[in-house]
Length: 187
Image 1 (cartoon, rainbow, N blue to C red):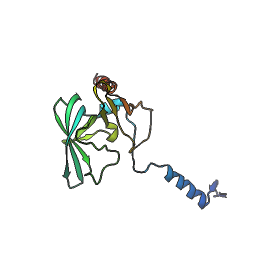
Image 2: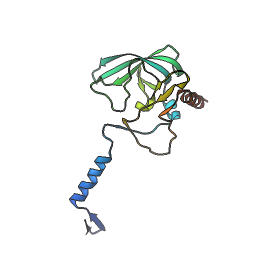
Image 3: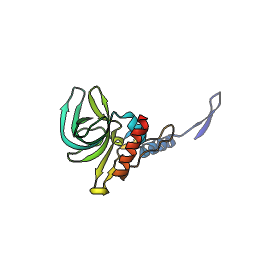
Image 4: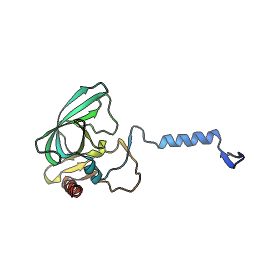
């Protein structure tokens, strides 16, 4: 490293090995195979979503579109909280076909249950915010838990701090938080 006078001030010039080391550290600490997103609170998810529902995953099919293939998943509404009714069927559209996927978008399998947040765009239904929008519901009876997997997301805080929901919680607690959030947003 050396200091050089550029006529208007001094500037530190770093050697090539120093620059290579800094670039290497930046690459080593970056998340590989992740989509970068802003963290969303439960209120953010409720506000940005047209539909919030407890769903059961049904059949999955692949639709070839000119712009890309899409995985279309039938979701049977178990309990609608916003914009959906019990027993309604929602078709979730996600880019990909099993060979290609959007990193950060959860892959849903037939028979699974979960809490999902959706938005509608031009007649199609999508998850509001990739993996932040889906909690899998597991267990039996009163011991049901809800968990979401954000491992394929690089969640980067920006602006005001947000209180984000836990990634694993009792289903009964998450359900109450969602109902409270919907009531708070609609008041």
